[in-house]
Length: 257
Ligand code: ADP
Image (cartoon, rainbow, N blue to C red; front, side, top):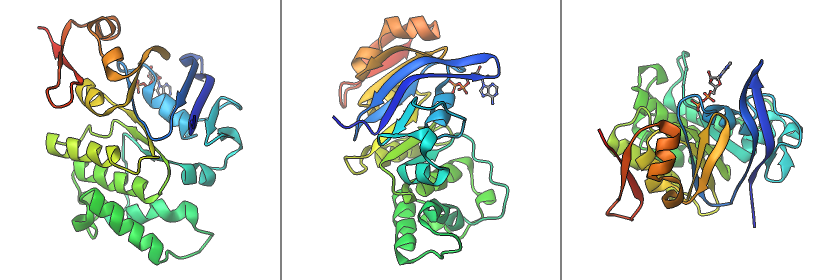
């Protein structure tokens, strides 16, 4: 079986604070994974480790069978695209400028963008409904529009691994579904790993869910296995009923108040 992302006994601390504890995971090609868990359980830290935004130890993270430690940032960017949670762009770039930056890993120093790059930009912007925003300054866009532009930049990187960190936090329900549909319908060999807050969206879109608490895996597997009353009670300390989404039978979390 093909596992583009492998995590072997990963531990990570910020100073003395241990956030990820001896975690091992294999992500299979072509599947949509969600990572869920309460605030502070290490979800974003895990994504930052996968994308090498944090210092990783050798032989803990393998990206397309290569030890992440041995890959340069440019090589990482050719394998994996990240849509981060917070987008702080203060410079006066247009949406188009931001998206075309997704092509820089493929460029030599000072090499200009070519027709293929421009076609990729147009395709990614159309997919994320941002093409009509192309000449607008990123600083003038709403949070949701910015999130979609950053998603277009990630698609433009043309990688077979995509990491999404709370991708729908700034989006209204229409754009939440539109956004997740884009990633669900990508080429079937693309692996998506998304940190999700909305348990019902995670349930609806994921092939597999990983439930984290305090840097450890509490459960993982298909939504019906992970999204249970017992797991939700254990990790979030709330009472819920689980019903079924009538469209595809995915578990649907209904809080009991
Ligand atoms: P989650 O994404 O599940 O909310 P995070 O990975 O963001 O969790 O954070 C896990 C823990 O690590 C939290 O206790 C958080 O306060 C801490 N943490 C996150 N980023 C930093 C940082 N840059 N420096 C120190 N501690 C951090």
